[in-house]
Image (cartoon, rainbow, N blue to C red; front, side):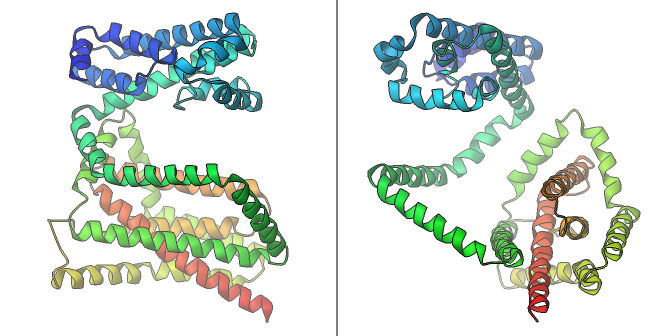
Length: 425
């Protein structure tokens, strides 16, 4: 590896071109590492950003074009005779070809981001006689997007390159455990495939039969319960990290990522969503919606105001709990006294509760999906705006969102259970 890095320093563009080209010929070379390292060189001023992108674009285009024509000229006999040398035997070819039959040329754009797929897309496109005009545009577009992502990532990480590698090493053991579990699961599936299939078929049939007799409200309650359990688990994990001062690396990396963003200045406009009049406008719109709907007004208004009015009391209870834990010795390194951030807690409670009430009874699934996506994007942009303004630590914002999320999902679950009781009576 050190020899490769030395070569890269001496012949950056040439090594980048050859490495990307050979990987797409299905040789065991990590294109992501080469590109992100090139991005690191861009940060250091040793490489030009545009030239690095152009190099990846040309190398990727040349590599996948070469494999296309090799596949077209050799046909399926090429796979049978030489496929094993590049880990593309007949069985793997059939699986990858099935992806192409399902998704067509669109897969070419995203194939670069899928390890084990991008190496063979050119060969399979040629073997399947895909028209070159249909092949070239998505193939070259995918190469360009692939290069932008990893070179930009390396450039943005810049001086935090070693920090990220150190952070990754912390979770290496967890990664190994997860990998072992996945491998064990694969082996179990391979040797007990038929039994597992029979069990799943019977389980799904039983579940569908049960769901036919269960009302939507009860299914929704189960969903809310699982979400609340997940949020509480995350909250307890963050509490442990907070008490033992383990957020410093997270804060350092997140702040650097935001500071490196070229959109950092105009992101601050999202701070207006935390102004009192923005909160008031959102609550006002929700009140009008509840009033116009006319059904279960009292219950809906209670669900609106109880989480919002109880937010400060909930936040103060969390702070008192942390204070008590610190007093009896549950404290490690120095940590922020603003965890979880009050304004972030109020933000997720107000917008989360209002969006829930606005889309809860809509029969349009698109509105449910759009409302959820809009809420998540808005919260992320507000968080980034606060980090960019250097007023709040990222960990304090994340804590506010998680703890506020626990509070609103607890209220959602309680009121939906109350709604179910009222409907039955």
